[in-house]
Length: 557
Image 1 (cartoon, rainbow, N blue to C red):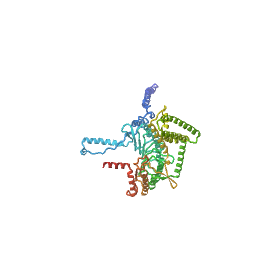
Image 2 (cartoon, one colour):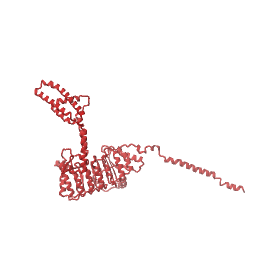
Image 3 (cartoon, helix red, strand yellow):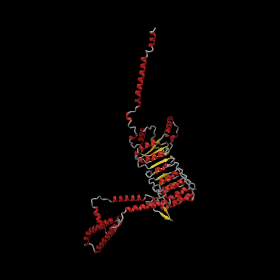
Image 4 (cartoon, one colour):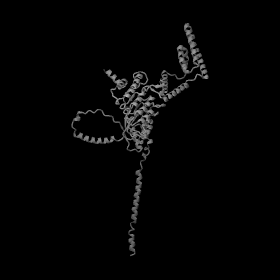
């Protein structure tokens, strides 16, 4: 009996080896799973290297470059680059459209309805629309981003794509949710782009700090800037006016500025007018659909006719004139230096002796043939040359040059001989075309230095006050749909009368043309009032578009 419980006790212990086997099988499965898991998690070896966006070199094709850089930076649901849709031509219904649709047409319409639903959803997806060059179908000319928020990540990718676009001319951002921070990154992106980029449009992007003026910095190359519908108020207009020009510097690249559909009032219009006082590059300005009344209109009209300089502007003008005079004196050598004057006198005496000695040989040969009267004339001309050379020895070279021209008129053979011998040397000869090009370049440099500040323009003194001629560079001014009455119209009438008297668009002179187009419609005055009709009569012959239409009609008749 003692053996039975042992047997019974040993019976439940018998399946232990089986239990050990099962545990060993479990451990084997865990080992297999552990071995299989890292194999699935590890990416292929070939994909590790090209995932760095810094190593990618852009090819100049925006669609492929943008997609590749987005994929490398881990941006999966990125916007696609598509060609900007063009408006369709005028649709003319045909006779077959009036017929009843067949069964095949009904099936096609059902499938098209499904496609139209998909296309509607695709329409709302963010895209980057581009316009291509006509000659080169792969070269991007303009970029349009509309209706979706542009973040720093997208701007970082664009900063790598856009520099390779050699034909890029314009960037248009409409309602993209810009902030002051993203605007600074966008402005930092612009110098990296091609030199052909001249147009930037930021519309529907109101900023709390209104830092749009940063686009008009001194180092900016933007020529056309559109800032419509940005809720720009008087403070923003003040910043923009200071960016146009101040007492010490002014913007020289901006040609057109569109500030329509904003909240600019009289004070803001005054700031813009202050910027136009010393700006000589802006040709086109639009302040349509704003809140400008008579006070702001009179400020703008004042800039277009002779206006009085303030005390600070008069002081700055005197300082600039003194600097210009000191620079001219430093450029021309002073005649009070004894050593320089002695060397110049010795050189002039030696040149005079050599010229006379060289001129005596042909004179001796011609004395036998020429009569006595001509010989006396030549002797007199030689004495005149000697006297002029002695008088010019104490002057600067720039002052003595016109006298040499007079000497050549008096006796051509005696002065031109040494110049001809100098040209026979081994030095490089310069043709007439090269000399003309050098003269033209020097004239351009002189004009650029003279146009440093408009305060150096000729002024008029009246009753102890200094008056500067009005801005005659601005060609286009749009004040449509503001709050201007007949009081503001009077100021524009006097400005237009001055512009008509001073500048004529058909004149052959190279000076500024003056105001050619002025829009004052849809304001708070009667369109039939005499002041408005007089402005229209004065501006009608100056409008180049209407002048062309009249010429075409005249030629047709």
